[in-house]
Length: 392
Image 1 (cartoon, rainbow, N blue to C red):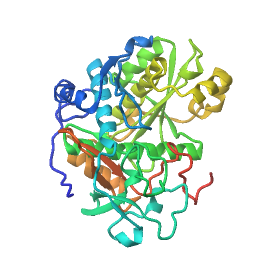
Image 2: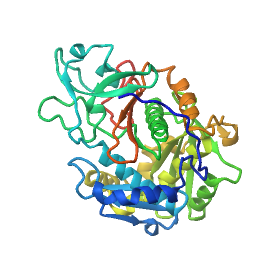
Image 3: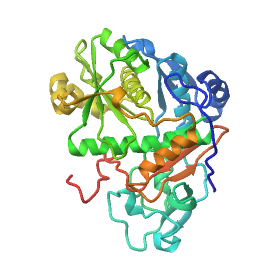
Image 4: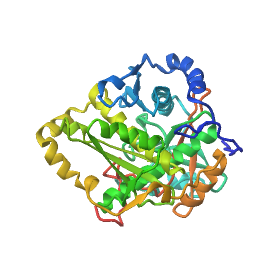
C-alpha cells in the first residue's frame, strides 16, 4: 500500500480546520450509520447545566471489548453531532474485518521491512522466535512500505488464537477525515497528544499555565463554564515536539461531584484549536459521565469512597500554581493546506523517531487511518507500557 500525500487546501476554519463544513460531512456520513451499526445519535447537551454541545452515537453490536457509546464534542451542535458519528466510524473501522496479516517472527519478516516490536514500549519481553501478526503500512518519513505489529493496528485486537497479545489494544492514533490527508494529520496529532500527556504524568509537571484573554471560540466556551460556576484550569504541556498540546481540568465547586473533576486535552498546529479541543473534551467527559454511557463500576466505587476533596488532592498537579503564558505568545504553525501541516508536523516528529506509519483502515468512503509512531510514549493510556530507562 503506497500512501501519497497530496496538496489539499483547507476549506473550513470555524473552530477547526477541515476540508468540508460539518453540514457537508454530516450529509456524507449519515447514510453510513446503519451500515456500521449505529442505531441512534443522541443530543445529550441537556444533561449538563453548561449547555455546551455534546452528542453520543450508540453502536450496540460493537466488537466484544470495544466501546458501544461514542461521544462527540464541539462549539456548535453540528460539530458535536458529526464528531460523535465520525468517532463511531473510526471505531468500526478499527475492528478486525478479515484483513490480511503476516504471521512470523520479527527476524523472519526482516528488520528492514518491519517495526521492531520493542519500539512500541511493550509491557513484556517478546520471546525469541515468537511469532506475531503483522499488518502492512506506509512509512511517510522514509516513503516505503513497512510492517507493524497488528496488535498496534486493530482494536479490539483479536489474536485468532495464534499469538499472545503484546499489549492491551487501544485507539491511539486512530483518526478519520473528509480526505486522507485530514485523517493522517489528526492521527499524528493524537499520537503526539498522548505522548505529551504521558511525559507530563511521568514528570508530575504539566508545564505552564495557559491564559486566553482575547475573544475567540475557546474563550467563549471557557466563559460558559465560568458562568455556571466551573473553573477551567488550562495548561500548555512541555511537549515532546514543538506542536502545542493543551490540557484542561474542570473544578465544579457547585456540585462538588468527584465525577465532575474531569480533564480534556488537544493537540493541533494552531494553539487556539488545541485549546478549544481540550475545553470541549471536558464538556464531553461531563456529558458522558452524566449519561452513564461509559460507566465503570470500579471507578464509580472509587469516586464514591474518595470524595471530592480527596480526589482533588490526588490530582493536585492539575490545580497547582505555575508560570503562565498567553496563548497569543504560543507559535501557530498551521497553514492553509493539510499537506503542509503534515510536513511541518513530520519535521518535529522526525527528530524523535525513524518512522511514522500510516495504516489505511478505511471500510467506507470515509478515510480512516491508524498512525503508529515507534518510540512515542503511551503510559498515559497504559501504565504498563513505559520506557525502561525512566523511573516508574
